Image 1: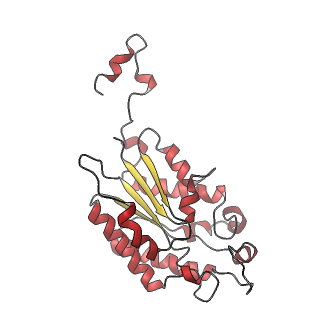
Image 2: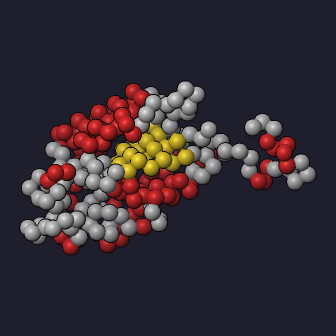
Image 3: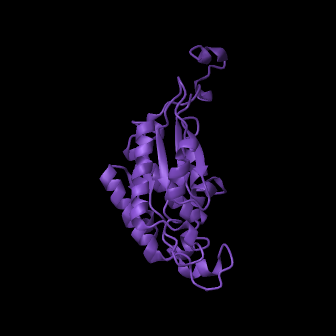
Length: 239
């Protein structure tokens, strides 16, 4: 049975199996070695993610293989401003940190050897958020700001350090590009294909640092190059 890598997050994770998405790229990258399993929930924050984790991630059945890793990619919705139209998604900064700690503890208790990779929220392009509101926005003000996203980025980085977890600092990484607002964000929050590529490359790099890479993983079933044309079934004797 192939091992799994779970992707746990909000809409940026839910959409990651779309055309050019970072989840789809990850699945292709690990083809024949790992099953990349999508668990993305649009609009969710860490409070809701913690509430449903037990249901989403049942214990490994007898004889099953524990997952190799899980990406935890929340914060963009937690960082919604408490006095704007997405206030119902807002989670205070101190609770966000507590929730991340609890989510990490949940995974460590369920699968002690699992690699937990945190991903910080991305930067926010505020003008685009005004142009692309999810619901009616009579105030004309963005429901998110880059400053707020930066605070949640730092909180996520802090939790990663406290828990000894690898982390992708997406908020910083994307802003290394001068044209990040147009290059990496489609609506001021969600990712373009180029933005998805950044996430994919950073996740692959961080997983490799933890020893999870294609070179170290067995291939599922014989490769065509290893099948003898004169005796094809010989390659399947051990399966």
